[in-house]
Length: 149
Image (cartoon, rainbow, N blue to C red):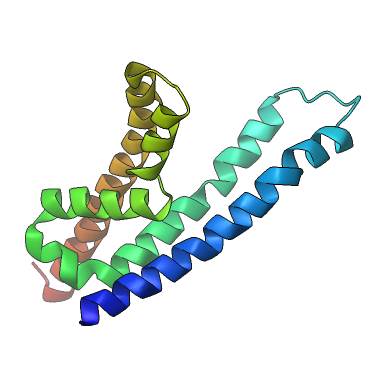
């Protein structure tokens, strides 16, 4: 019964973001288009540098989330923990099942869906691998330093 209640909580949480998405999807794109009318945006390296610097937000968030979930994940070993953690990160962003399914349903060919979302999955898989291997290496190094090995 407890699982059912957790599913209800998950459904309510998901529906709240879905409702905001539906409401904003109706007017937001046209509003942005009118606000940007007559303006042109050129990609520049200065914007890319800011994007690079602020991308640490993802790494910090993933690291803190791993620290909170570490005891439950590390028992599976590093590789399985990496896969589980990356799937969790993808699921939080709706990138594991939802986005590929929606991309397919709107008419993208399956090979396009696989390539589009494969790169998104690769990002989360690499981030998970680096966070877990890095965190565990720092812990092992810290342990050896404290023990005097």
